[in-house]
Length: 319
Image (cartoon, rainbow, N blue to C red; front, side, top):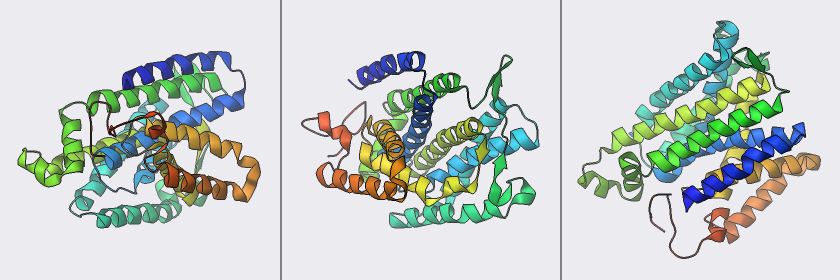
C-alpha cells in the first residue's frame, strides 16, 4: 500500500511541473521537496531508531556551508561541491554521534541541542575560515550540467531536480533501507534495546550508522538549498527554521510513512499561506500544531488508518 501511495504521488507531481507556469507555486513546491529530504533524515533517526537528536539543522547547515564554501572559495564544480558537502555533513554526524550515543534518553537531546546552539556563533566568528561571518555567503554558483546553468529563476528545472532527489531518497529510506536487515535492526533497537542485543544487534554500531546516514541525507538538502537560493546565512540555524522542521515531523507523524513527507508539505504550504499574517504567523502555526497534537497525537497520517498502528512501510511496530 505504501508503494502505491508513492507511485500515485509521483504520477501527480510530475505533471504539475509541466502544467504549472506560476514561478511562485513552483518555488513553494521546490521548498516542499527540499524540506521533505530534511524531515526524512530526521524521521529515520528519531522515528525508526529512537534517538532524540536535535542537531538535525546542524547537518543541514554543514551541507549548505560546505558546498557553498567549496564552490566559492575553491572553485569546485557545484555538483561535486554538493557531493562533498553531503560527505562533510556525514563526517560531522560521525563526530557528533560518537560521544552523544554513549549517553541515554534526555541527555542525548540536551547534548545535540547544545551542538545546535554552539554552531551559529562559530559560523558568525568564522569569517577568516570562509563562512562569510554574520552576512553569510552570497553569490553561490548555480548548478551546471552539460553546459546548462540552473539559475534560481529557472523554477521548472529546479522543480524536477529537487523532486527527483527527494523521490530517490524517500524510496531508498522507506522501501530499501527500512524493510531490509539494517532497518529491522533499527526498529528493534527503538522498541527494545535489551531484546535487540539478545538477537545479536550491535546497538552502538547501528545507531551510529543511522546517525551518519541521516546527517548525509540532511547535508544533501542543505547543499541543494544553498545553490538554489544562492545565499546562505546563519539564519538557517535560527529558531524559525528549527521550529518549522519540528512542526513538520510532529504534524505529519513520527515514524509513520508517509507522515514526515506529508508534514513537510502541510507546514511549508501553510507557512506560505500565512505570510500575510506577519508576526502572528508562527503563533497561528503553533496553535494548529497544538490542535493536531490534541486530536491527532500520532499525526495527520493517522486520518486514513484504522486498526493497529503501522510504524514502517515494511512492517508493524509498537502502538
